[in-house]
Length: 338
Image (cartoon, rainbow, N blue to C red):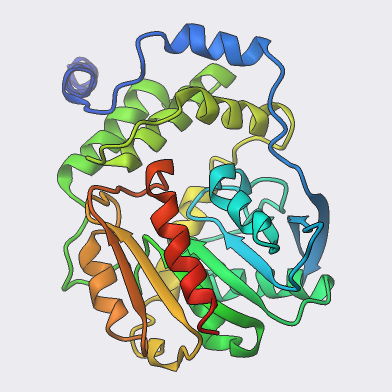
């Protein structure tokens, strides 16, 4: 009887999220996946790749050195559960055009960096530990300081670098982030967002045994982060990146999401430390961000001396190409203030 009841409950949940889940994949998703699998993949890694050992953790990075260098370097720090491939070329190529060298790297726990096997909730690594990964990369390349642009959790890591390693950072650009994710005084993630996460898991990510399932799960999460934004998503490119991770790199670490979540929780609030940030700081956030509400940006922006803000109407938790010209205009202006 109990077994029958359990089955009925599970089927009810599946039916509910199948009908009401708002994150839909394109109708031609299967043919699109087959197309990606059978075509030659784009080369998403165009720079020099190497590894650095940071107190026993191997970190994989890529540096795209400029042929007409201006002597300055930009470090792009990826977000929660995201490898260096998350950065679209239309975001970093304008920096190369202006003479900057660009560094992208895989945070610990994913990509080609070490996947942390002996991790536990009782002794998680923190954002502070992850900040030292970026510093180790700079040390290995003999780079004294760089401009840091962090996205989501990557911006939290970049804030920590600005606080703890002020001589290694020229400017800080903090994109769709927060000074304290678990701030009880601020708006939390909506129930709809959580229900959609459950729906995605039930529909596409219950076991993730095949590459097709993993690609569908990856695309659906990217669509979810878009929120109510009015931009269009390049489904094929997202699927290509997912397949590139699976076929060319190490694939996806199913345990990293939990590890990164605990890194954020273990690090707590930076509110009392943000006033120590003295480098030029630009805070970018979308008004429709479904994961980190814009109230977070408005609050921590006031705590950083002379921080500038760029709040983009209708942008979600992503970097749509349509907003890049305005974003770069503000970033380059911030660079000049160093």
